[in-house]
Length: 130
Image (tube, one colour):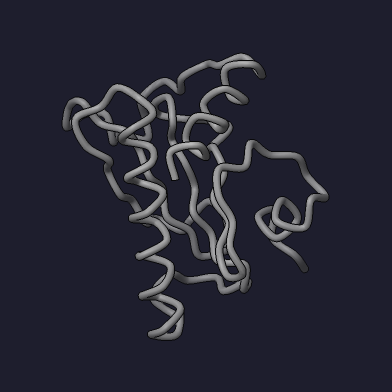
């Protein structure tokens, strides 16, 4: 069975796409910890991040770095935090979260509420900074 991320990649579920290449897809988290919180996923459906083949693992992190640099140029933040939990969706993915404080990476924090227009603008801005 396809994961929700595979359905997003295939266009079966809408998203706010930030970047895509032949192997990876990046889109805004719909329950963000901060403006610009982005998910980077492998197009190859592999459940566990540390089960990615070496080449795919390396390439995914290089792709995530490229997206993180674009996020830094797009939203007000000091750094981009990186989290790999993999418990919520059985599909290897990386959270890129804009940070201004150490507590910003607490997934128990209230989520940022954004309008459709705000999501679209943030996605457009990050994409333009790639």
